[in-house]
Image 1: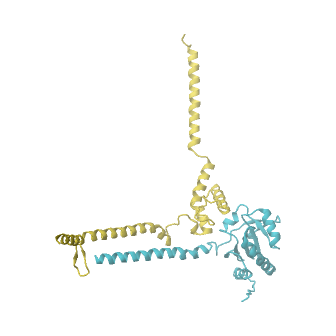
Image 2 (image 1 turned 180 degrees about the vertical axis):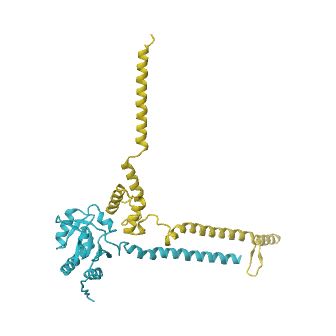
Image 3 (image 1 turned 135 degrees about the vertical axis):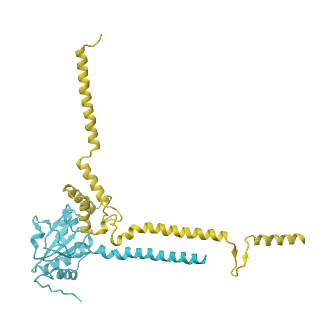
Length: 188
Length: 173
């Protein structure tokens, strides 16, 4: 009787430990996998972006330059938060082999154009009405930014509002294999 | 008055033609019902594949169930890929390559994922063992006489016997 009691207590204890372990793995173990895009280190999917000014840009034609590909929407508050950082960084990298590209998704053209008049100064912005580029890049929310190196490979994906420091950090990684050096200055 | 042979032949031939047309109509109708059109098949396949994919911006909804913009885009891409001749496996692999395995409604039973598949069976087995142990213990306890810490036998009826004794003594007084 006593032996049975010890065995059953031990079984319950082991069972609880196993179940907690599984839950712990499911919660904390998967977190890293979810955050990391499977596209990182792979070739950036090619696309032709229809710009709001009527022009077109093909990603493959930008080979040799680092690309900051930013997905945004006019209704997205964090997108408005990051807009000044994107604009000032674009001015900073204007004379370097870096291209800033904005992709407007899940939006109305009129709202997007109005947003661009308010927040965007110069770098090219286009739309993806069919969602081809959006899904091809595995975008699940805005703002989302991809950093593509000079060889056309995705070096990083950043989800959330960008700051000048974050842009500097990821662009320095995207330009790592290029001949151009980027000064990475922080306030710290 | 009996119909002439010609009239009978005419009726017979008209009856045969009608029979032929009716039979043909029946088969054509059956075929149109039984064999779905290409668009029906693609619709079904879009739905089936969409049910296997979880909407990345929704809580617990599949791409088939969600009305989000992303889910609509994903369904359109599934349709486009099916029209281009891609198989279900190729389409699922396309989405896994972009969103990771977490996009699949039922993760493949490989790597650490096998835990998700055996967990329900393990939980049922564990629960069964616990219930079994509990029932066995309660049955054993019921059959075994209760004893004190010193091993003295406690009769379940002793209280009643003592009470009876007290009442009998009271009656004797």
